[in-house]
Amino acid sequence: MRSPSDDTGAEPKALSAAAVIVAAGDSTRMGGGARKPLLVLAGSTLIEHTLAAFDQAPSVSEIVIVGHAADLEVYAQMARDAHSKHPAFRKVRALVPGGKRRTHSVRLGARGVSPEIDVILVHDAARPLVSVEVIEQAARVAAREGASVVAVPVHDTLKTSASGTHAERTIDRSVLWAAQTPQAFRRVLLLELLSRAEAEEFEPTDDCGLHERYVGPVPIVAGDPTNLKITTPADLAMAEALLARRAKEQR
Image 1 (cartoon, rainbow, N blue to C red):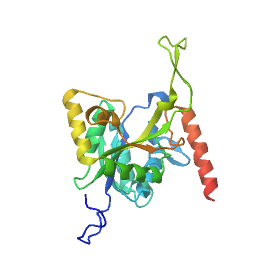
Image 2: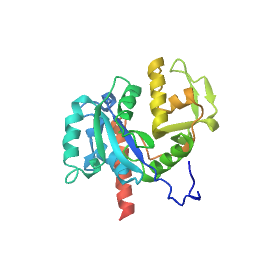
Image 3: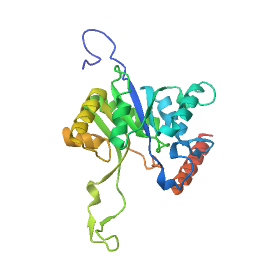
């Protein structure tokens, strides 16, 4: 990669990133009703809050939503109304039905990204409070190092329990990090890792598990405890409170 001081005098190429938003789950732990991406959070759908951060991120030029098949037409209508009612959908390039497992969904989404894109950011639709700053840092580190994982140190004391009724031992938390999203990769590398995983039927619980298996350790980008994943109704209530606090601070 040429540096800004190369003798050609040419400006360095601007980073071009795409976001693959994974929104294909059944949301079984939310207690029924609409799936998580379409739940209302502070007056907008959860997925609109998620997309808004990527819409505002300078490096992100396109978004691919990997959605539950039953929700794709709703997303399509929102994308058609992007310049009036749903501005967070302005960068949506493609809507893709999800697969049976997360890795399948990410593979389908990554294949929908334009070939000129440098970096793919894989992000859970259920993390609506991600910041533009975290997105940009994850993209920059992945462009430089090949991949990055947003994570925060674990502060709670962790115990093991095979039975679920008795604590057996304490785990050293000093080396533990809680992974968040986005998890970012150079586009070509991610496609290669996903193809290898498909051939081996390897299905990690997160995307950086691919890099850990086939390449090695993944650079960490400092995350934010407020970048929580909406899994239960209590999480939704917490997100509402955090958004209210943000709005108050911005006044």
